[in-house]
Image (cartoon, rainbow, N blue to C red; front, side, top):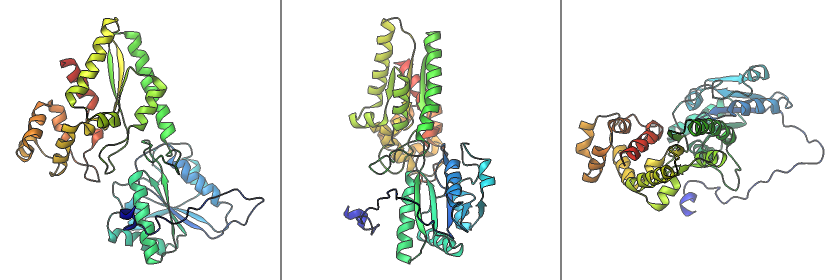
Length: 355
């Protein structure tokens, strides 16, 4: 907590609790609310905009201003007024098409000051940032900067993302998590039925999950929810592998033992779900990834290998060509390895078959 106090002076301020009132109360007028998409695509983002516009229709002379192009649009003051007619065309649709987004974050003091100036020039009474953990962290820094500089704009962060890694005592679920879980579960269920019908295939299915937000491991909430709905033969969770400190060899052996056990019963088919961030939870892979993230990317094996330690170099040599290539691709906006680019399920299938 003492560490957090260095950055956020209101960390121990009293919580505000909103309750329903008896009868109607006056609706504040002349509200100007800015909104920007900052996180990854998720179901429900457009409906958030529609809801904001609908609510402010009862407020006299109020407007919702949407920043086009995420944080880039916010910095450059590129905005459009969101009207009921415009939002109607996007109601119930997925994606972030209406306003779009960029990969940039609100990082530096200069960028924080840009946001403050834009809010003052547009006379915004509120600024809504929609996104995941990184976006809401940025929202906290923006709010603290506004407080220190005396800006009057209120900052609101909306947890929105399919990974569901912001669940806590204040957030029951992120916007989009439930829809994403049901959509992915339908695909997994259909694939599992196909496998049980053909009775000669093992499907390794990678589930998109929590992005690396600076912690040691990403979350596997979506993979777990999908598994609860579809009941696969095996689920490989990032958190479980991390807790048990399982090596790649141990993980492959566990999957191979399950396949062999089912084969003795005449069941040469099955479905195995793999969390997207699984490789980063394996100790030897984590060391390799940490070393690679310190090097400029994209790159080639010839340039990278001399920079690696002996152990990481040996691990890199044992990997198939497709994984070597994917490990050396361009990084995310936060300089982390793009776990979504790693075909973890293909690697495991390759290793289990070899086992």
